Amino acid sequence: AQTVTQSQPEMSVQEAETVTLSCTYDTSESDYYLFWYKQPPSRQMILVIRQEAYKQQNATENRFSVNFQKAAKSFSLKISDSQLGDAAMYFCAYSGGSNYKLTFGKGTLLTVNP
Amino acid sequence: DAMVIQNPRYQVTQFGKPVTLSCSQTLNHNVMYWYQQKSSQAPKLLFHYYDKDFNNEADTPDNFQSRRPNTSFCFLDIRSPGLGDAAMYLCATSRDLRSQETQYFGPGTRLLVL
Image (cartoon, rainbow over all chains, first blue to last red; front, side, top):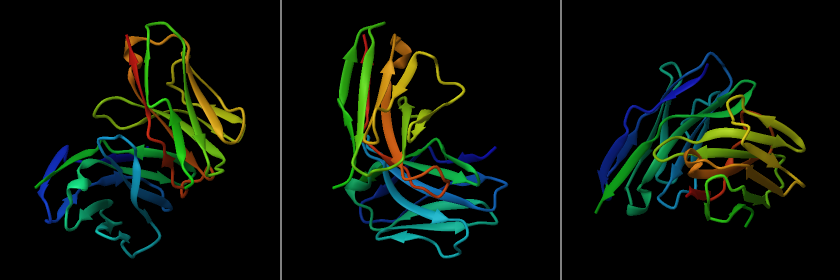
């Protein structure tokens, strides 16, 4: 069974600094997709970034980028120039093969300090 | 803007009194999901509809049911809410049932059981 592990329950960062959130996963599939979702205090889950496993290039979305290490099964999220609005719970998620269901990690609560 | 809408945002019910939560979408997606999310936890999938086909997760209690009268709307019915059912309920949609499809979430309904 696929598993997703986020080893950092909480992280904090100073405004304008860079922070990296860790995620590792376990799968035997060759075709899979990885996602980072953000859930701010208002609680709406928002897609931050996604990565297709077959793509070697790391996905980027403005200040958000990933470091996808397929052999190590690692999928970390880097947030550059952190802003107060980045404060949220961040969930790493996986779907793959014939399994369309999302497997979530337990989440990392990010605090941004002014 | 195309989106996933949930009503109400907050719902208070009494122990044992049936309650219905609503979700609608303007994305014209084939799949609609219901998740339960308890505090500081990842969302837990309850069930989903692919068009009119209903798929219940094995560990979803019988107390939870769902209806999808048309493509746009999906309802979550809790027949006899218990104190343990107090949670955030998230609706999500995806275009299709494939692992590469991104799920888009609504803002959630927070249910309080008195």
